[in-house]
Image (cartoon, rainbow, N blue to C red; front, side):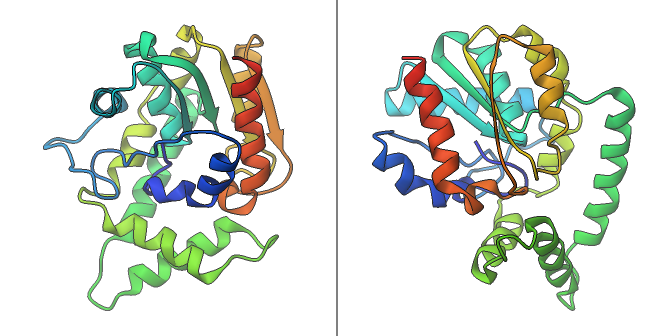
Length: 241
């Protein structure tokens, strides 16, 4: 399950490495993102969870390992809480156990960012979004213009408002939710992630969880280190079988 605003294409760079390691993967567009239909109301993380279970039902999958990155990690958590029998193992790639004071700052910051990202007739919102994603990607390795283009297109191509992802994420109490999880869980992070500091915080809350941090990378770790990322994911899955 992908971050916001994005789609299942976030994991494209890891598809071949996961297949090579013998993993069957199913990447899902959250409702309203990619080519998934949106809800007819402003959704919460809790509202999306049944959609993931519906995909499992459609594919005839009784139980699966569930992975989510950033907003997708919150959604993966909620799937595990609402339908625990369907989730064998959980991977939280970038947990988000923020305080209430931090929550207010994130919400205020997202409102400013969304105002800058509103479509404009001169197309300047695209240039603004492109420049922001170049900055977020970092300079080591240097970003591929095609990758940044894909990320920006994912932001605006969704069938629902792209703002819904952050709206849902910043209002979800991941700290409380993490404490309720019963499945074997991996906290996966990378030291250059913009929310890296929240991963050790989550690990301190749940010392029984596995913990792996990749070195470097940024918000776009799957594009930057697909082999290392796939190793971390698969090693956890195989070790827990």
